[in-house]
Length: 471
Image (tube, rainbow, N blue to C red):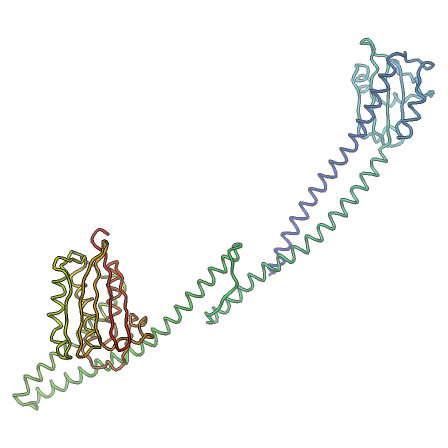
């Protein structure tokens, strides 16, 4: 059976309230009842002691006892007095039937031993329920009789009944208000949960741009905060998945084109060589072209393999301290010819003793990828390789004065398969759009950081921060 959460909340709260009110009412009623009866008994004891003290100078004889005045005063308070002697004979009032016969033997023994008897409620031995006090009269250590005071408890009962009625009325009002407040509070909390439920259903249906009101007031507010964070991350993940899917499709098209072009060239040259369709003077040129196209295919495959290895943490770095100037010289020597093809100049600015703590192969890979990009987008310009150090890190700057990068493309250039210039279909570098993605992953593997600053038509600068050894 399905029970709505709001009814579960209200039911549990009302059950607790009813139980609490019931316990408190019973305890309070019992306490008040005991208090009323005890006050009545205390009153009887007080009057009894007063009368006995006044009688100390009179023997308990009917003629000498001035009880009429006491009796009239106490009768106005519904208190009745009976005096008896040591034999149990009634001295006052003038009656023949003394109620001492209604006392048990044990109670009479208690009185004769000089101890008082107090009964808050006596329901059986008299015509009506009474509070009873029997006090002994002792003089010079001798039991001479005693006094019996009774008061009907009907008045006390009426007061207690009236008090209980007021208490019941108060509890009913308090419970009604509590039910209304419980309903409102439960409705409030259930509505907050319902909003999260609706947002969850929206996410289940593919809508990740949802937001629920949140706060740090209670656990539901914190849950809403966590939910909003989750929805935000899911939305970012879905957008990333969509971007990746779009780039994947573009990548497949690019790779298909990149693979088809060199393979077609290689296949044509091989067929030409096999069928002697290429002249002797052109055979060497054809072999060179086959070699270049083969190397291009190898680079394409290696870039993809490298990215997957880096992304899955399958690459182990062997970091050593390297002279940064020597590293720059290797890069310059390797890429000078490519730079000259576009009338570019590669310059170095680094101190002889400056070192960088890095994996040799990977730092070469990082710098070559970036400098290749600079060469690709610079003509008749200059590429600077600079090195400097702070107290905790080595800073490498790679700057060009080429065409720069459009501001909307700056954050995207690190993404896998991304190409800022879709016209780069047949260039020998960065065929897959993975170069800078690999660079960023490798820099992070070195516990470093890389930033880019670029101005359209003015140039681009990459800044790499690599921590020093033991940092």
